[in-house]
Image: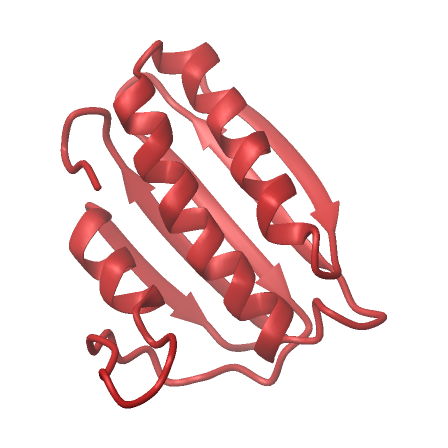
Length: 132
């Protein structure tokens, strides 16, 4: 049976809170520190994008759902943003950032973006499948 936990957060502290929340769930469910570290990186990238681009940094909030199943962990990060085209291209040296979806695409087993209403990024990862 899967364990499902949710957290609502916003503002500049949201990525840090999301990292600790996801790592706590993963460590409890899978006892795999390397997996927890990879999840910290992935969730930090997606929540940072939600704060910057999806109204999660102002009066809006980001909703994080973690479902820890027996063989994989599913994350959903939802915000009130207008949505975006999911193009996982690597960042460029002439500008900061831009690595978030590239990292998600590289490290997740499966992932996607749903743009209505708001924006929902979901991803699934299995312990041992990818490490940062």
